[in-house]
Each structure stands twice: as C-alpha cells, then as structure tokens.
Amino acid sequence: MTIDRKAAIAAYKERKTIAGIFVVRCAASGEAWVGQAANLETIQNRIWFSLRQGSHTCRSLQAAWNAYGEAGLTFGECERLEDEETAYVRNALLKERVLHWRAELKAEAI
Image (cartoon, rainbow, N blue to C red; front, top):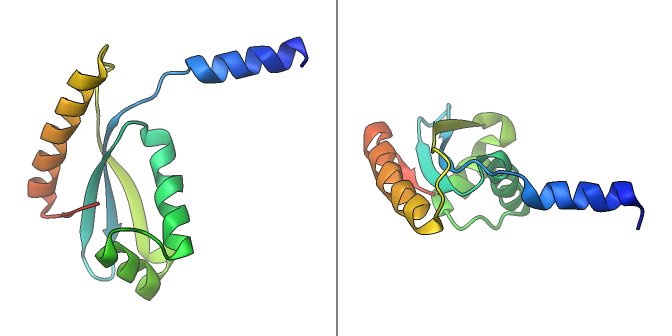
C-alpha cells in the first residue's frame, strides 16, 4: 500500500458521523415515514437501494415506491443531534426524538 492510500483509509475510519432523525415523504399520497440514523449522510442511499431491490422492510414505503417511483419520494432531515461521547446517550436521544417527530408529522416508523 502506498502512504497516500494508508492515510486515506485512516482518515475514513476517523471521520465523524452525524446522527439524527430523517423523514421520507410521498407527495402524491401525502404519506410520511420517520426514522433515526446513526449516520444521516448515508441513510438515504441505504433506503433507496433496498427500495430499488424491492426488499425494504416497511411495506407501506415499498408500496409507495412501487406506485410512484423514486421521483415520487423525497428525503429530508428533521434534526441533527449534537456529537455525544457515548453510544448509549446518543441512542437514547435518538429514540426520544424519533417519537417526537413521528407524532409531530403524523408519520409511520421506518
């Protein structure tokens, strides 16, 4: 391995992730789905991939994708959490905030 490659790998492993709450909306049906993620920067790609494969675990979201396609759904961030030192505190905060946003947006869990 070259030094540049080793440095790039080390930098990737040390990067900070941003935890938070996100929403997926369907404009045509008016439905919304709210979820939590340890890394907001990668969650949309993961959800869209499983929807394209037809294997998403949320049946109503998969049905909306099948009916309206990728163009019919939008992804948005509801809230970013401050950087927490412990995973336990971060996870507890995520659970609390996702319940708030589900109630606020009258959304299903994802």
